[in-house]
Length: 336
Image (cartoon, rainbow, N blue to C red; front, side, top):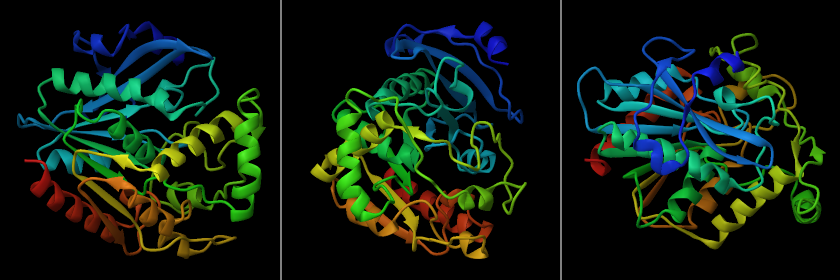
């Protein structure tokens, strides 16, 4: 599969080359979705790619959204794309380097040593979206993609290629025991400087994955090789990258564009399966999200979603309908 894809890669030597003509082919989702693979400069593991996924609105529009997925994730949310298209947006997503469609055999899946590594992928895809005619762009990030998008917006202030930001349950805190956070994390971060590849199992409960996938208790179908129910171990380098990103957030981020932050009303800590998993965030501490959001300097709005799950747009239908109502009402006011 990967060999076949690599034969189709359009090589872009840098983000600036994104304006060059690229060639799309049918995406794995079919249904009007197309994709193109973009080669980025090599890194500490060797070859690096990211993938742009596109589905255009049937009526010509100057508005677009770029969706950035979270950890242990990739883009598969067709319903979300179609909701944006119905509202007059061209839909784009990016599978970041070492995730989903962009994962290569020489890489550890999800591997990262600094969240800024993803900035080149976002830059490149935003440049492509601009070159294809969209003038007003929403940057949308879920979970770790939400933290990454926030750090990216702070880094690109004054040079933004986007006009508004939507954060869906952004990864604004490590949901671990406070004692572990104060004692073990600093030691891991220090050791990561020389031993970034040392593995650590975060022992993330599989219950959230079970609440999503059709083979368990959920309503969604996706590739379990790219988004496994049992989250694979990470390494010290990943812990350091996320820790440092959260430290930057705690010190304050300046974002010059309107920001909407939505999260569940409560966190869920079930130890065995229960339908309670459908009524809250089983991954993050929602109180920490609300608190950390206050470290964003700029025009931002935060709202809790009753019965929202971690990925709000994968919640039960009445909940996600409310999420879309809130989001598109906000966009009508802030992305004109």
